[in-house]
Image (cartoon, rainbow, N blue to C red):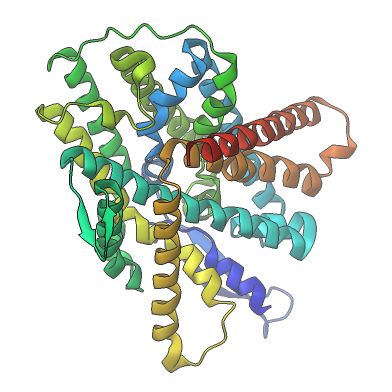
Length: 431
């Protein structure tokens, strides 16, 4: 039971969404027994707002590079992955409707495959979060070095370059936020994912159309060798499934969840496609793994795009790391007085580990491609599809639903295998 509670606490939550209330209700047969009733009170608009913010992330800076990797026709794969992930989002709801005891993402794994299923889903979910926030540090170091180039420090006979130095400085800035146990303040700051993405897209458009960069990049129609990297980065952009149970539980009118899901995925896909097309048109084959690194810092639109990219990850780092911290804390036995110290040790250790990976593998595009192929695909495509087939028993019945789910699983496995292999090869070759 303790382990189960720990996994429940480690599930990803939406800090601003506090509209789910829990009541104790008398059992209709035995008046001395009670059961818990969860009642959501969030409007459809508020739920949509939170889901859009969850999907809109730092993946938008690498989406032009993803399009450049696969060529113009690969944008069709972006829409394919978006549709597949939206569909698997509906499977999360169906799993929850089949058992009211499913409250979190790991609960789905538990209901489908027992404790091993819960453990596997928790590992996938928390590993994805941890490597994603590691990417934040790399992104911060690269973009700060872009703003303030040619900076070096000499320490004990060692020369530390600008990117490494700024990555370390970012970790020091973030450290106080990960030591906090109350994330309510940061949750308000980090709720602007959609706004940040909108500002970023407008800045790109302004830079290309008005500030003189232009749209002269022709690019390639299709590049077969770059498809694994492209689809892996596309998948990374849609890794919000672990929060869907929280959003669904908090809705006042749960019958509108499908509409909310469709609207959110449509809005985010439109934003991702716009950023991909703009970036590829502006810089063509020269586009970097972070399109902000192509921008000329002397222009106002460039600085707005870079500053917007810098602010959001700093605010989101601690929030995204919190489920990982909680998962570890639940496995560590400690008394009441040592809880604060335990939190500080675990959170600091995770930050140091994240910094070590970021400095050792300062390859944002390749690392996020690895996360997308290995972990995002698992969490957003494979887990919902496989667990739904098991829980519903659809794998036993041949029909349209079975064919669709198995097709999505085959697609997910293909992305995971080829994308992971390509990402690992790229990382090893560029270290």
